[in-house]
Length: 355
Image (cartoon, rainbow, N blue to C red; front, side):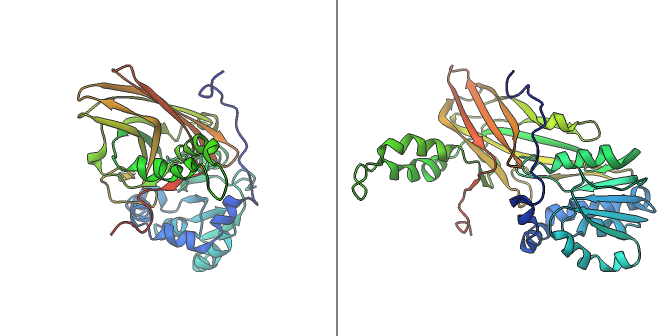
């Protein structure tokens, strides 16, 4: 059985763990609220669909953080909102949402949705902002699906309702030197304080290559059209997210060197009154997710019109993230691959280097 065929559910560490500790840190929620594309997309979707999907409805905000999305639902006329948060951010939510709580419009529950007990309560709508880098990092999308299976009424609404994961080949003449060749050159020193570091050079190169690089990329850097994998969040099972394979097939738009693949995601709000997307694509208004660049072990030269194909395999791990394997081929019979640890990102351009 290959990694892409194994659907065994890998346990997600519960509270306490570093993930929940991080989300108990209030500045993290400030960063999320200040992402106007993210927060505005949810607010817009809730408000525009309020008269049909939220008015007098029972709503769950799954992984509510400080409670902002749940408050949007209250503002849209929800009968009651169950705001569920496993981290200490639940205490912040109780303070932020005190008026709604006092009016019996909202209740904040500090619990993991997998363990939550709500006897006889079912939701008309479940809200969740559970997306991480490459959509699936942090594995909150699985909790969204668990909430659906445990608490959503038949015919109930999910916000978001669909998600798409995209990968495209890219070119960047400076990236490899900046984040792999330059830093790993340290390990070519044969006499550093009397130490011969050279035996670790190859391991250093592989370590740098294993880091996904978070940062914005210009659409002009793409060497081919993106390949896409879509999830229908009404139908996708938790097991479906344990291993995900995204086939990649595209045509080179021009001559160049494929450095690797860049990935991003978007999610759809298919409301009764209004439908819209939250996109993290290159060229769209930037979000805190930005895009994720994954360098191949070796560059792949292409000529305009060349076919580029391969696949991205993602397998859930116990670090609330994914191990990622990428393989690409070209018509020139060249092949390159890489193994990525999604939970161990780097950043490029480096923070503070952009105007």
